[in-house]
Image (tube, rainbow, N blue to C red; front, side, top):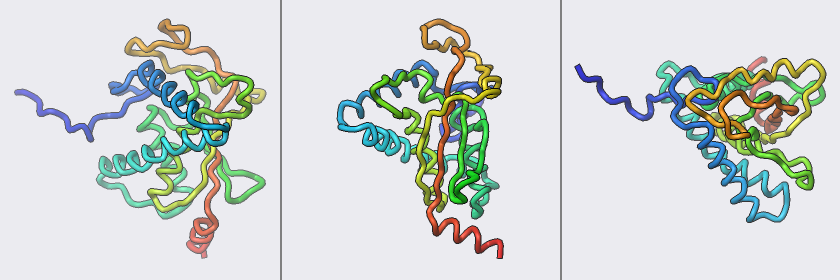
Amino acid sequence: MSRAPINILDRPLGGRGSRVETQVSLSAFSYLYSELVQYHQNRVDSISELERRLESSGYGVGLKILELITYRNREYKREIRLMNILHFVSTQVWKALFGKPADSLERSVENADEFMIIDYEPVTSTFCSVPADFGQLSVDGYMSGIIAGVLDGAGFSARVTAHSVALGEGEAHNNTNSSSNGGGYLNQTGTNGSLPPRKEKAVFLVKFAQEVLERDAAMDR
């Protein structure tokens, strides 16, 4: 008996480290993403404007991935609590896009409205090297745009920014590059194998709007 074709909306997205069949190879994505960065780079006058353009490019993806995940999960209930939506982003959204959850979700000890999603192996900066004269540019801005799109689409207005932070002492063990380049993916040197150890992690700083915090606090009363 022939098997009915799978609807494209039911196909796994795959991703780095995913056990499911990957729909887009890592080498193809890295090429397209580097072209996207260069496209915006040639049309801006400042680093901050380049980051905003990368964020804007990812924002629409965030809206669509939220729609796709909720479509696939028939039992999905709209999240109304702040911590629940952050957990949703750092687990379900990350798994759908990259085949694994984010490495950490933390709350700022200094500012109650700020949270941090941490990824030790962000795919968007794996194949992009930032020149020294570009200062603190983070090419992971595309991913911060995705996060903002998901949060806004779910009704949690927030400003999301990406930051490249040097690994602290004792953090290197988290960056194991355990996900292999299955399917013939190419690494930075153009050969098969694991990627070289990273010296930085990506920190996505999520700063919620005041009305979101007030709404969440009201639910505890």
